[in-house]
Image (tube, rainbow, N blue to C red; front, side, top):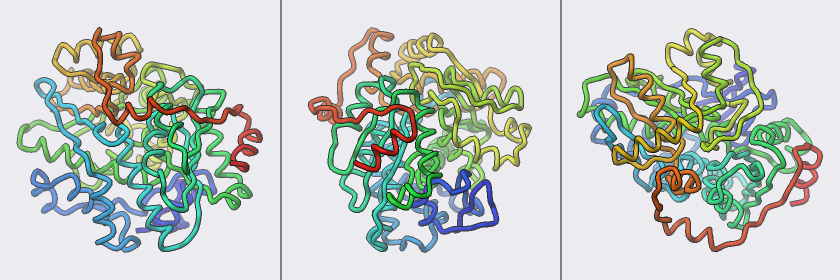
Length: 431
């Protein structure tokens, strides 16, 4: 399978090159030259397949012979060594819990997959790389954990100072070894801008061998298709209604992965892009105008994105047609106050969510007002990661998992930097 830039479809490169580059030199995003379609036999057997079996079958189609099948199978099975349960919340409403990995966030899937792909490529072709990623919270901790100790890979994480949760910050600033964290005086968009500018800096790229671990990297995106197939398979026997996925959306990588799954043959009826006050995509769906703007800080901080990168991919896949986009995706936006009401309502139903899952639930329920469907909202992070919001809102005390207690006992180590590119470049060159 070859890959191309959304800004230059005629030039093709390998999967390995796309992973190593992260971002094309023309500032587009990589897409596969085709989205492969799975056979009917795969879907007929889907309810009987484990997440690991699904992941292996899907990954083969995107990677081809660039990683031998025996190596790829081991890689996928290691990545997906935790559960992603589909939990019934109420009639026709299910939660797909994606937070049972090492850092208690859905991004463990993509980050672990990418780390192992790069590790394999580094064994075959001795070439050191620097992974550069901007994070509004969970990407940083997942990438840090996934790449910790990977030979030939240095990791630099940028996060907005004071705008991630204490748990998220600890998870990416206490590991040491090959993991470096830089807190930026600004918001997530400033961090993302610095990362993109670094990738367009040819001298810096050559010097450090930069690659990205954000959802702009195709190796982060592909494995996120796996759990859409798995969830659909789990629900096949329990409903005869069309199945809809509501995706808490910030940079829109997770929703893009879901669309990949649909185009590969998963009979997903529709997607709901549920977001907070950062309403750029819902506004585009309503008006036809894509207008990036400075991000707004909310209690669902992983969605605090004012210029979502993966809109570029979605826009390309929909032929730059708002009508085609609207046919596949509905977009809704919610305030912090509405999010807290949703958290309380879910608690009354016997389900404890995090703020992102609560937003996903709201979007799903809004879509269900006019459609007879079974819905799945993605629960993207463990509630404990947002204890400062969840505990006072619900009046409860959450138990801290042992995996997080370890981080709390360690001291934060992070460099500080302005949002000025030259300041940032000077720091990264001397790490």
